[in-house]
Amino acid sequence: MIFLLFFLGAISLFFLFVKHRKNEPINPPPGPKGLPIIGNLHQFDPSKPAHLYFAKLAKIYGPILSLRLGQRTMVVIQSAKVAKQVLQAPHNNFCNRLITAGAQRLSYNGLDVVFAPYGDYYREVKKLFVVHVLSTKRVQSFTPIRQEEVSRIVRKISTLSSDSKVVNLSELAVSYTTSILCRIAFSKRYEDDETSRSRFHNLLNEAQAMFAGFFFVDHFPLVGHWVDKLAGKYSRLEKTFKKLEDFYEEIINDHRNKPKSAQEDIIDILLNLKNEGSFAFELTMDHIKATLMDMFVAGTDTMTAMIVWVMTELARNPDVMEKVQQELRNAIQNKGYVEEDDLSNLEYFKAVVKETFRLHPPGPILIPRESLEKNTIEGYDILPNTIISLNLWAIGRDPEFWDDPDSYKPERFLGSSVNFLGHDFQFIPFGSGKRVCPGLNLGVAVLELLVANLIYSFDWELPKGLKKEDIDTDVQHGVVMHKKNPLCLVAKPIS
Image (tube, rainbow, N blue to C red):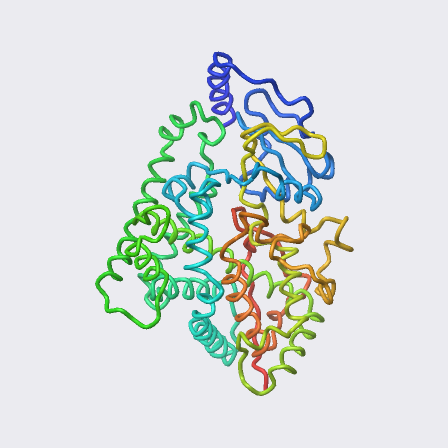
């Protein structure tokens, strides 16, 4: 691997010397020394989370540092103060998202809202999302679906608890989020049929692997394409794309042939908008498929991870669990279940959710961006086409803004106006500015309703022989910060 990287770099350097090159910045951010040609690529362990590696480097080089990844330079931001300068930069200098080889193909060359280049098209496709697909009114219209799926999970846990079985909350969270997203997007549940369920989850896993996968072309643009082709990476990417394409076409064709129903799902909405032709661009089937990709890949993964992290922290902090249960049960009393309207006035419950987002942002590193022109941040020069990564995990632990930042203390949000809408740069789990996550409202609604009912309906205990200290917070490598080991607890129905 190292030899191949050197070989690639040597060829790339040959071409670069032939071409005219601009001078390097006078004062780049500090960072670890790399090797000739490959830079710091050899220092990345693909099996370990990058946000922890970056946070370790910040202790040496400070809150803004640079790394060289083959022919590309990456600048990593790890404090709220510097993050604000990037996210509020003038002239939209940092509004473009980095689009990797995997993302390029699966997003239909950036037709989706996540990877679309910033400009007029992005503003139109974002309007598609926030006005038509996931508006506040639309999210509210899906409330009965969320309530039904929560009831399914509660009944399933009740059955397990009656047999004194351990509940795998990680598995149930996956089932819950995929069922909701499939119903609101496709009007289907894939969890009831094992064959369909297996196909759906295999597709999801393959897509996520392509987004997180290493492509040489992303680091050696001049020659990496040929190496990826020889290594079979493009072949695997194309197979994944074709499977997803077949899946999208199958569900779209089903909708074209089915009778119209009272409850519109997202495909219905998109097909109607296509027929109306009310956008500044022609809404094609590729636009619809790219939008489904955002819902399918990004939505399922992030919501699942956050449900598990909330329950993990409550299990590790039984005093917090007891306090939030008391708040819920006093407010709801004998109704038997929690509805979304019940949640608005539960201050401590909301603080628990916020504190979990602070410590465990669903994407520990914000989707990287690219600088459009030369800029200066904190006295350091940032060249055009530099990759900009914001370490949200580190920003949420910035000691300049957070007292005792590594401790789980929901109380810090009581009486505080700080929220996750993107205006408070020490707390931006969904990003900020012009590229804040458009699925924020749906994600929070799905999370809060299930967690509230779990802690309202059951008392939670550790499996026999375990102590709260035994519950780990290790994370999987990937774009989304999943708990590495499943969260397994014992549920006791309240009397």
